[in-house]
Picture 1 (cartoon, rainbow, N blue to C red):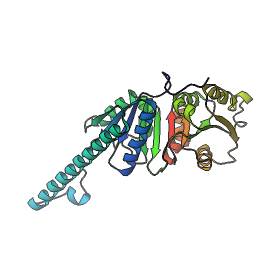
Picture 2 (picture 1 turned 90 degrees about the vertical axis):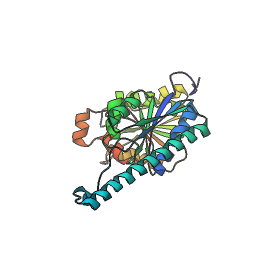
Picture 3 (picture 1 turned 30 degrees about the horizontal axis):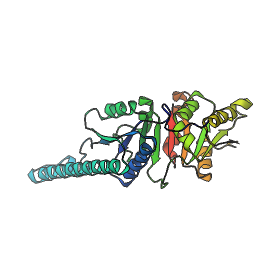
Picture 4 (picture 1 turned 30 degrees about the vertical axis):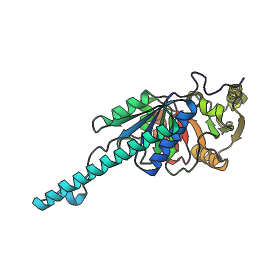
Length: 292
């Protein structure tokens, strides 16, 4: 019997989206709002206030009354622009929630403890939505990688230049039979059971000495029992990196969501070797769901 996304414990019920004043920030908010509408979730719009005014080099050593007045005027103008941007973001978010008829709230993060507060809000959410690359909605000294590691919350990364209208119609799972990959699949279940198609992609199964049961057939069967429409594919990397194969397949198959487990090898090893997680975070060109 196929499960529906309205069943308890399957769909996220608190979604935190990190906002900014860019056009990609508005699109990101719209995608998050559509997911909240689909799942009957509460949407938390996180708006990070600009941390501080950074002076151009020419103003750093200003001397004389006139130069100091120019610096003061410059700082005031930047502060005014930042306040106006914050107002526009807040108004857009409120209008979006009203239009979609979703439960929503705004959370403003100020200059003090911005990273700690962002992590705290993510920690108390079921799903976090961020952009890629900057502007991504996060405090300037908090990366997507750090947010994912510190909060442990499943994270949906929406590339700023991605032009798709919906997320999760055609899903690709990067499967390597690890705990992290399984965690990502379970956390993404609301996407998987509602998708028109789900492909489980296993890369270099023979090189990892996987048994037949480890090559994706078992997880495909598990997803099939949930009612997902699953296909199983196996590929050989032939010298290409795992991220290159994953992203290449995703683009070729017109997937609109990539699901992967983050840091399925020791994080220290991935950092040293430039592993799959970090490369995907840097180069993904489509919505990517990560969990660990």
